[in-house]
Image (tube, rainbow, N blue to C red; front, top):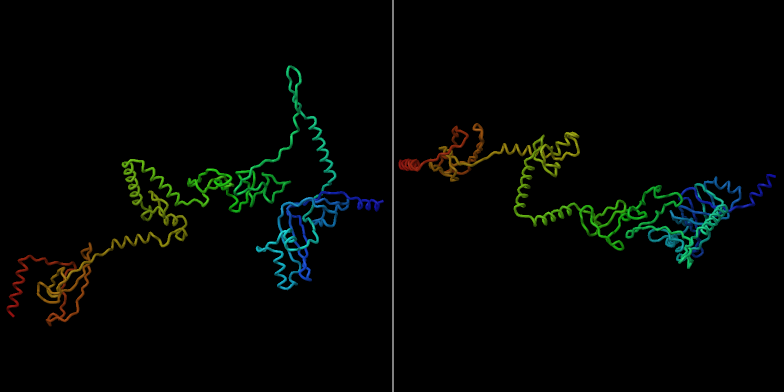
Length: 483
């Protein structure tokens, strides 16, 4: 009795609708062949579909076994392809290509792949490259789900009969009467199902649904956005690849007037599909914004009075003066707006701030430290020395600012020496630099080195009156006359 029932289950077959349990699990393998002379070459093209439906005739035992398999080879059964949707991957492989010589391998690759090393589609392989299709294999990995096709058809037929029956009873008659008599009438035709209407962006175009959309499970609220995101301007989705997320609102067919939300420009404006913001096509530049603001200010100032301009200039100068006066609270360095962020009072400079926050080894401290430079400059200013030159006679110790090598007091020749004197506020400190010229004096006595008399370091000038000078000259004449 049991053997008879098993034979009965094997013989009776029922048509089932077979669908994959997971996405990207429907595989289609196309086997091609081509002859190069006497050499037969085989090509396998593999397509991976996101979804597919198949009508498969199965016995009761086969139906019980097929739902337990991880990989189902549909070619083992009587199978009819209903549909395959959303191609995910497309690959081509020449079987045992290494066994052919290099010239033949090159020719095979030219007949299979284009310049971008992407395989040709089915039509090009058959019509243009002379490949012949031998077989097509279908398989599903990851498990399948089955439904009885007859039960679904019966339920659909019942629903259709009910809808027709209801439409007959729902027909409404409109009657026109004049003086209580029927003069005409009309029946309202049955309402037809309206097609879904939706709006999509054009230039750059949006798609109604993304390529990985699951029509059975996904909705706008459950769809997980990734490369494809929902457009806020239309009912579709856009590819977030850096170009698909913008809409050229000022070009055909949109022809809208728009203004940049950042800089206020009205030319070459695009709208972002993700947030709806209007921006410049070439991106806004801060310098351009500043220039435009300056131009606007200039245009506004032209209509103002000269007195208002002068008052504004005075206020600006006062603010600048106040900014220049403000110093750092810690190191007393003049604040800089670009370096320290502000020139207001009670503000620390950049290095003092980060040294207090992160220590002396902080990476935000500007190097070399500008605070040390200013301290060194202040020290240089305080220790700044001033030298001046004077000429002093090595015999009579008279001084003069003239560079005449002969002394006008004692009459000696080539006896005036250059002396550099350091001017200082401290009377106890001075510096003298003597430079004695090398020359041959006519007078042998002049060549004898004399000890410099002790003298005060501070320069002593000898301003003489006309009477004193005349007396000196007379003494000199009498001395010469004695010789």
